[in-house]
Length: 429
Ligand SMILES: [Zn+2]
Image (cartoon, rainbow, N blue to C red; front, side, top):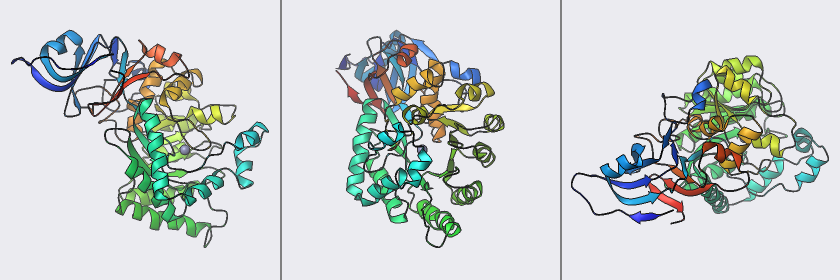
């Protein structure tokens, strides 16, 4: 792949910063505004032999290479040499800022212990809370930056990052502060989410109701005031928070101008998808135990259904979320990593492939779920996740020739070059 300085300026040409040329195909993901649903998920908007012109970090034109070459004078030309070009991947759900790891739990899982029993034995999330509370802000920031480097090399250009392992306010704030410091507008842009309602403390000070009030009435306003997060999320499940507790926290979030998300119907059905759809949550995530009614409610709502196939694939669970039923019903399906100590996967190409091999999405559906729909799950669907005029120029050149091939090869990094806001960040010249 060639990266060259532009040729001599001719008066009739328009100046651009970057011209990406000679893609085998550009998968633009163009189409009507809003997340893609149903049949709309199947059309990746391919431009054969395509090129993309970029000025001031934004896409100004997409079309056949000969037309764009004739029209634009570029400071830098990136030759895709026949590779597939897609938007940068968007990871809409992960728990990036944590310390330590839980490799030792592999043996417990292999011995058949459930998540709930590991939790009750004082392991699981409680261990990560201890490790994360013990880490300094600079240690956490370094960990998030290291992880973001790997993500960028594998094509993620925008990503969520949740708190939730600090639990006490000073440590939750520390996690969100680490995310803010590690976010890089020319690398991986991080979208912070406050997940104060993650694990319920074993003996909450003042009792459980007082603890929920503290999250809703003290922590949420503090997050909003300091602009530490864009979203508030609640882990709604039998071993975590109840519907009523979730409602209290999410109400306060909206009252303070923050958007909402739910860990919904993951281990048990709690009618969480219904609650998310009803209260206008930007996304309902996990959905392994969602009911037919929950699927219908999601499909009729603006809430994005974020599926996280790594949880079952790496957690020895015997079922996945009903992805096909969600797509057929018309829900806006997105895919994410859920990177956390219980699901240690950072790379979106792996998730795209699981979308096909585990969830039975088509390669085109999986690509839309990892790009434009994932962006909508972060409220950024009109900014990133597509290659269209006006969108942020977050582009990937892959070492494969087609969307099918992107889904096909497993365990290899397909990403040959990463362009973030018009700057070539990763690439072999
Ligand atoms: Zn999660």
